[in-house]
Amino acid sequence: MVRLTGTMLASIALLFSLLTPVSAAVPEYAKWGTIAVKETQRHYQADIIDYLHVGRSYLASDKVEEKFKLWIRTKDGNEFGVNVYIQFNPANDTTYAIRYEKIG
Image (cartoon, rainbow, N blue to C red; front, side, top):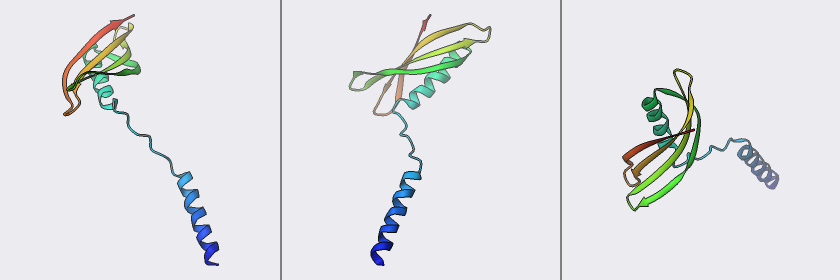
């Protein structure tokens, strides 16, 4: 009887572990993506329609650059893409520069 109870408890524990939602890890670039969106909205006085994290480049031991591609719509209805580059120090998250490159 003890063996059956142990097996039942193990089965119930397994069932709960399968039913519990797994939280996705927050990507490293998430903080910088939020900054890219907010600063681009402010810079262009526009709404962000689409967002893509393009990648991360290591420029030096104390300088990293995240690149994002945003599609924006201005208040007068114009739409275009913007590459946003954010350079920062990964040791303390100090921002060095934000650069915008209008595309299309």
